[in-house]
Image 1 (cartoon, one colour):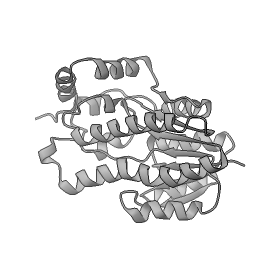
Image 2 (cartoon, helix red, strand yellow):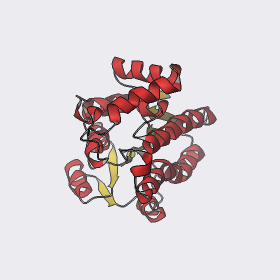
Image 3 (tube, one colour):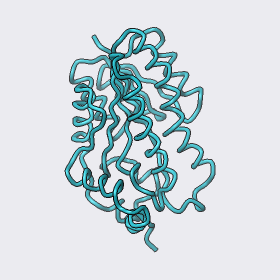
Image 4 (cartoon, helix red, strand yellow):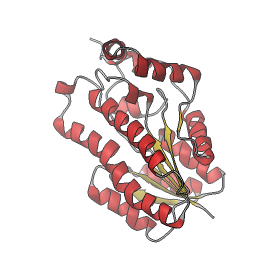
Length: 249
């Protein structure tokens, strides 16, 4: 049996990625920072790690659980975000977002990708976002972390060419998950709008991972938004983002 490790797997895209992996016959280790992850592990006949990836100890707990086992699929999905203006956001929340979204992927990918390269095979999925192409007015820190992941994943994919290890960046648009509620963005246009189904997003991500594709953005509208974010003037994109993400009075 092949082993898949999925972070941020208690809800949303991560949960659906874990379900796809289990349905496709992989053994799974699932991680989240809340007790619900144990129910997920029971559902999928897998192994749960309840740990906080914003801390070095949380990352070490996952690596210790994996121990000497060979990880065939590493799906680094855990992430958090903050709504409202940057100056209104608590500094500890800002730091937590950076640690979870940026430092944790680095702490996990570095040792596990090295192990994959040593044996000449493995697949890595990093969950970025089309938000990473956009100056994130009222989501400034979150969008910046996703810009990092989008860029890092693309660079690493090319560094590992010829090693037998592939890197795929899943870059979804707004998806129906707990993210917007947890980020305090219920009272925004983007918080209210219809969003993509996380199971649909996860299936696209898994198929791209198994095909060894460098990136995938499910849906035509999301592809158009990503292209606009890349090619329109930054000020235009930032203003459009402000309209979607600014809290209502």
